[in-house]
Image 1 (cartoon, rainbow, N blue to C red):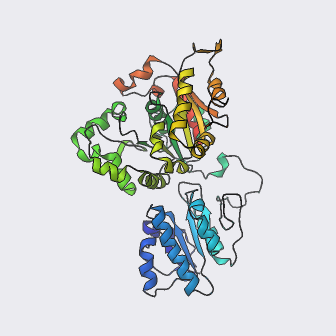
Image 2: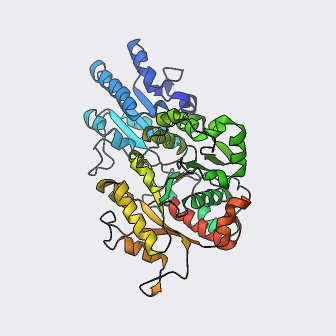
Image 3: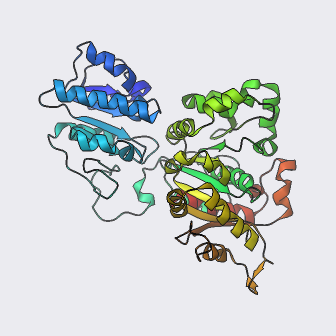
Length: 458
């Protein structure tokens, strides 16, 4: 089979996955932007075109325009029409390209929910290119009939229903230091190293968002999961207080002080624009000294954040956003790219009512309903003496009140991702640079359970 690969910098890696009988007709890397020049030059297309995420610019409107030009060119100049297969890790791509899949039946999309796309998926894509007709894999109200949504299966695997964790290929890594000590280690070890989740920790300001993000990232690192923190709270920038090495670096290096903006501008260069906490643990935030409004206006927006998320979800097991609720007023377009929201609420009535009101003010009815469906509650600063109507204000009571009708934004009762016991050491993390998850078994277990439930998704 003669194949044209459109995979940007991923070109050589894709070639290694292809069978020896496959002839790649263009030896150099191509992306969607320079594909028009390739076509205008009268170059051959072969028997099929294989596209991967790395071919895109991360600008949805531009990418859609370039892909449309390719499909239209094939429709006019190719008889029979050459099949185009897109392999993507972005589960939103079928929705973004829904009109194209409806218009062009020679476009096929394969979704692979792993950090690294295995060879079996490339083999499956070649099988799809070899088929003359497209057979829909699933069809629902929001999915066009020609969209393919598949996850790789191991050879010889039976067709019986698999568990959540069985969907992901195992890619074991050596554990990071310090290592976890509780029994949850075995549970989290069952999560394949191929899984990737984008989690936004959110809630009313002052409800312990940043501390929760920091401890979840440390816990993930202890348990061998790669993670990166994106501190979107550009107003308070409190990550500087939790990571003194990062703060010191921003004082000496102007570029690191602008880490968040530089990473938003060039997501693929995160290894030089973000700060490395440890081997598999990264942070991107703003230093206190950064104050460039022009750069903020240019890069601190939904489009850039969507591009950053799209890149990082292919590099890390866990992408953690520190995202106070009021920021979603400006970043609503990013919500569909977030896998789960960890909604931080202390167990007192004022906190619950404030959170419900905040959601009503920030989000419209449709976005609020989506937020509700994709959220899990994190009961922060848990007070075991708090009472409601004469009884203990248990964690489950927080969910119950939210879903009781006090707000039109919450139609569904949410699950609890975890409970953070209150302790004076919770506030001393800033002074000691030691996360509370590393101070005792109680906190280690609390954040370990929380991590497991958030990685499961909503």
